[in-house]
Image 1: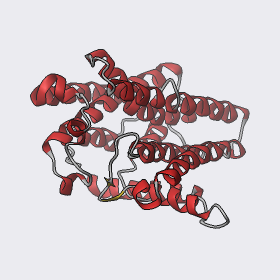
Image 2: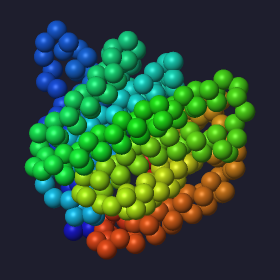
Image 3: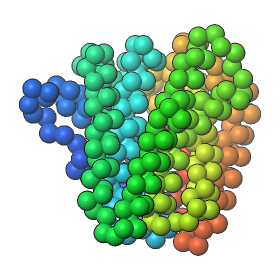
Length: 299
């Protein structure tokens, strides 16, 4: 089985896990449930839950304890996209080749759909406590919940989104500020994936810290590559409008450093991340190839 076949199989598995925790579209709140499911099932790479499970397996994790966290992280990621697309944020009408949630359901319902996904994410990870089979697994689960809340919250993704909005109001963009935005808005959820997988599998503090560093590099590289594609790709390839950064007057790594330096930074960060991932005893060739594929992705 080649890399593409393995990745396709893992995407399918991640979606099967996710579907187990999505709500049924019924009751007086049916419309918001429809909007939530529309948002989550719009396709995508399922990168974060796959990375989480690969991290879990890398450190010898067994069983289904990781699955509620896989689903929850994807819910959080998608809620952030729903809100990012809103007129008050990036004002995007297409994502993954189809209309964004607010264009289908209205911006008010899209706000509620995002709120619903965030709350459902924590309902979902709470169910992991019922799956824990020992006191040690209970402690690991509690630590994993804490990591998820931190990386998704005001000291993680939301903090990065705040800085991103502020940067669009005339605040001077520096490399330090831009990296803060990328670290928190993008890398934080990848860090959550790697760290939670490692914690649930019983990895020690040093290994968890190393995975956090690797995920930082991957997240920064991923976002710089996203900035590159916004300049060099097309709507047909990317599945969403290109040039939105320029249209919204957003300064990016490409704006500050140019295409070639941005591409070199992606390569440098990726090499460092791969070195970390290759240093563990139970080395995952698939995980390393997946990370490597991020630097050459076209969409």
